[in-house]
Length: 143
Image 1 (tube, rainbow, N blue to C red):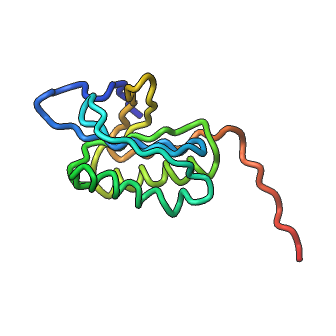
Image 2 (image 1 turned 180 degrees about the horizontal axis):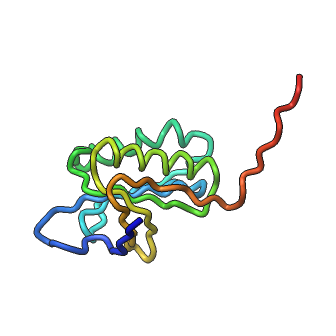
Image 3 (image 1 turned 180 degrees about the vertical axis):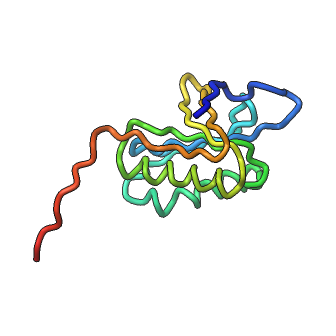
C-alpha cells in the first residue's frame, strides 16, 4: 500500500480542495470541513449513545450550511485510532463508504494545532481502525 504524507492544501493551489474530516475515536465527535488549509466549519458533540444515528445527519448539515455538495468533496480523512471500538467502527465505516461511493480519495489523519495532516491511501484501499486493545469476544450465554 502506497501512503503519501501530506498536509491539507498541499499541491496545486489553483484547485479547490474540499476535505471532510471525521474523528469518532472518543466520545467527543468531530466533523470538520477544510478548503485546502483553511478551516471552513467544525461541529463537535458528545456522540456517546447516538453516534450511529447522528453522524450522517451532521455531515449533511455541515455540508448544507456551507453550500457544499457531497460531489464537491475531494478527500475524506478519518482518525483511524486508537480509540473506542464502537466510535471507530462507525466513523471508519462511514468514511470508507463515503469515499467509495463518491469515488474520491481516502486518508487517515489527525488534527494537531489546528492543522490537518493526513496519509492518503492508494485508490481502492480502505481504512482499518486501530482499537485500544484486542477484541474480547465471549461465547454466548445459554438461556
